[in-house]
Every structure is written in C-alpha cells, then in structure tokens.
Image: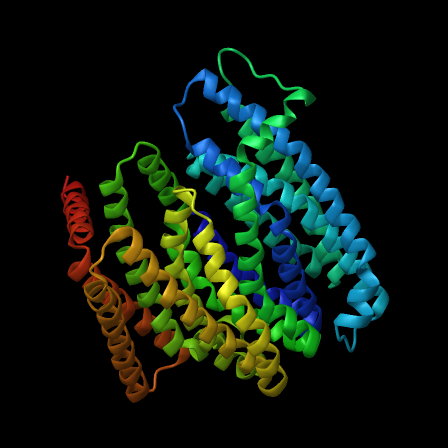
Length: 496
C-alpha cells in the first residue's frame, strides 16, 4: 500500500506543483529531493543495521530489551547527525546559491531561504529513517505502510492547498514539509517504542551507548554502500543542477520521477524479502535461501520488464495525460524513455543486494559501486554538457546496464548456481525479449488505430497485464494457480 501511495503521489501532486510553482521553482523541489537523498547517506548505515538487528533473534523479553537499548543508543547519535545536517546546509547555502544553481526568475534571497528550510526538513526526515528501519525489521509492514501512506497524502494534499489557497511560494511549500516531517518523526518514534514494550520493562542510560559497537562493522560496510548508491542514483541530477538551469533540472526531475514507477512498484515486496533472507541465513537454511533468491528474482524481473518496457513505448502518452503541458512533455519524454529503461534494469539489483546484506556481505556491493562510480564521473559530465538532458539520461542508462549485468551474473554464479548460461538466457534474455516483443506489437497496433493518449494508455495497461500473466505462467506458474483459485472462490462467494 505504501508504494501504491507513493506512485499515486507522483502522479497526482507533481503536475499540481508545476502548475502552481512553475518549472523553475519546481527545479528547486527537484534539487530538494536530490539533496535529501545525498545527505540521507549520513544515517543510512545505522538505519539498515537497526533493521537487520530487529529482524534477528526470537521475539522474547530479553531480545526486546536488547533491541530497545540499541535503538536508544543509535537514536542519540542520529539526533546529532540531524543537527549536523541542518548546520551543514545552513553554512553551505551561499555556495549552493551563487556557485552551483543557475536561477533566472527566482531571487537569490528566496533560493537562500529555501535551501536553509530544506536542511531542517532533511534533518528530521533522516531521523525518522532510523525508526522506519526498526519497524521494517520488526516486520510491522502494515503499520509502516499505513503511517507512510497517511503522511505522504497529508504532505501532498496539504502542500497543494497551501500553494492554492495561501500563495504559490516555494518557501511555503517547504514550510509545510517541515511541519509534516516533525509530526511524522514524533508518531513513528512512538509506534516503534510501543512495539518493543515487554513484561520486564524497558530501560536505558548513557552508559549503554557502547552497545553500538556490536553493529559498527556492518554499519560501516552499509555506509560505504550508501555513499556509492547515492552517487550512482543522484550524480546525474547533481550534474544537471550544476551545468544546466533550474528549469531544466525541473524537467529532468519530472522525467526521472515517472521513470521510477517500475522500481517503486516492484520493490514493494522488498520489505518482506529481507527478513526472509535474514532468517534463512541465521538458521543456516542454505538451500531455502537459494530457492528464495531464484523465486524472488524471477518475480522481480517479470514485473519490472512488463511495466518498464510498456512505459518506454507509451511514455509520450503517459506524460501528455499526466503533466498536460506540451512544453514540458516535448522536453522530457525522450529522457524519460531512456531513464525508465535504466530504472527497470536497476531494479534487478534489489534481490542480489538484499541477499548479500542478509548474509552480512557488504564487500561485493561496495566493489561493484567502486568499479562503476569512476565511470560515472568521467562519462556523465561530458554527455550532459554536450547533449544536456538526453546526455544525462543516456549515461545513467549505460552505466546502470553495465553494472547490473556483471554484478547479477557474478552473484548468481558464486552464491546460487554454477549453471550461469541457462540462467542468463532462460531467465533473463528470453523473458526480456518476450516483453519487448509484446510491447512493440501493442505499440504498432496503437499507431495503426491512431488512438488518443488516454485510450493508448488503456491499451498499454491491458497488453502489459497480458504480458505479465503470460510470463508468470511460463516462469512462476504457482502464482497463476493462486490467482486462479482466488478468482474461483470470489465467483463462488458472489453466487451465495
């Protein structure tokens, strides 16, 4: 549900933000998202460590107390990180305004105030990530999704109301974000603490802060993963903000936002996968761990390509219906096509990543990132300067493709199964070709019928769903049987 709300938020609120704020001010919103992702790495290691620790061990009073004490120790550090981020952004405001961003119609004073407000919002958001890790580790997925959904909708609808009824000002948009982030932080902390309550009572004092040492090694490994992951996912937007204008950054943010939909949808099951992998690893069920990897990877790939390939073919229609701004559509759609293919490929790294993290193996992920990151620093600036938005998107796609192909095959061969040729052709290339063929045929039919954008999207959804069911039937038939049985039960129920 949480991922569905995220997709809903992208679809509903971004066009309204652009309408009220304009392309250039929306560029600041895009920069806000990039800055948030970049600074989140300062706490990402501990958040993932808490998630892993909370997923391990039996659910008894002793373990609940241990988890509570660890949470409180890390919590103290997190609030220091949050304050450091606010101070860092505040001190770096002049550099960002005068040396980095290229605004035209927005005054430097407005941009300064906006950047400082971003720092406050980001500081609180990062603190809330700690408790998010705790909830997910405790497998409170329903609770997490409810909280996330409520606050995403509250933040989005509230921001639109403020911009519409009060004033279309980027500073009011950011002020609303700060207020919602503060409430969200208080709520999610309270929920996590309540979930840890036990019969023996919970206690903590400053002397227990040394228990952070127990997760330090894993945290450092995850921290380096977070650094490289942030570079890989945000460098294109950082460089666009440097070499191009704020308005172009806004356009690129639109293209990247819609391109994330396949990733957001397919990764909605990741929160359930990681605890499963962790449990099988902790009880030494190696074969079950390998089988889970294969099954989840097949499902991930099928959903990713079924959604991503059809979105690529129908991207212009999607943007036309979504944004309803022909100028933005014309500037964004080619970059969006390339980006959606890149993010479709990137989503295939999720299962190998979670497998390695569950096995406490962060070295391989860091090695992958270490090899691809220098390539990004070399290729991206050159292509962005020469080809602007399309150059940014193409460099993102190529580097993601190279990294995913080598990384996924290495993990499968060394940890899952030595029969790599069969895996490559039968479980990767063939389903990708089937999805590509189905998407191409659907698009040719659409072109011959000369459908409007709305009916084109309906055709894409129907043919994409057919492709999804076909691939599931071929590769994961058990899922089709489950769906079939549920449909039969519903039909029987309706006859009563």
